[in-house]
Image 1 (tube, rainbow, N blue to C red):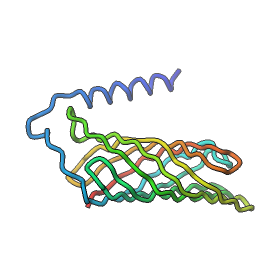
Image 2: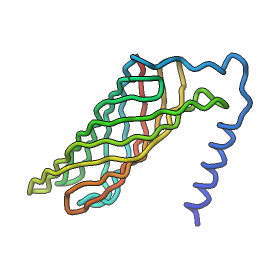
Image 3: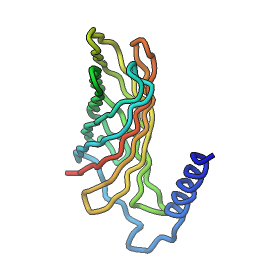
Image 4: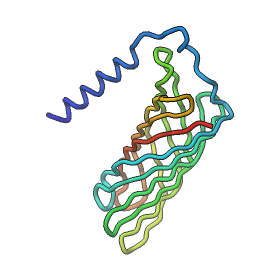
Length: 170
């Protein structure tokens, strides 16, 4: 029941932020085409072979168009005696919201490999699918949250990553 209240509160806050009035000076969005960005995040990785573990993400994107970017995603997870490292090439589609140009939802997907170790080593394919939202807090600085459903060839077949971090555009 508590989780439902928190989710309802978050959804309500997001609707308020997205639906606020737009001022004339906020209606233009900078063109990202040809720009790079990089970032990092931290958060839980749920339902891994070792259960829930602490995860880190490192991202890099090159914008082919204002909305479409490609780049690497490195996910690293660990706890006592268990670690996993996933490296994928991601394609990301970023949306611009006319009602609030500082908020950028995105969808992404990619393909690569994952290596897990708990005394025995396993390597297999990794396919992260999901999305997130970036919130611009300064001219080239964004806070972000990314939720990924990770399909693997390992014994657990599927795990979820939820990262909170930052992104810097150059």
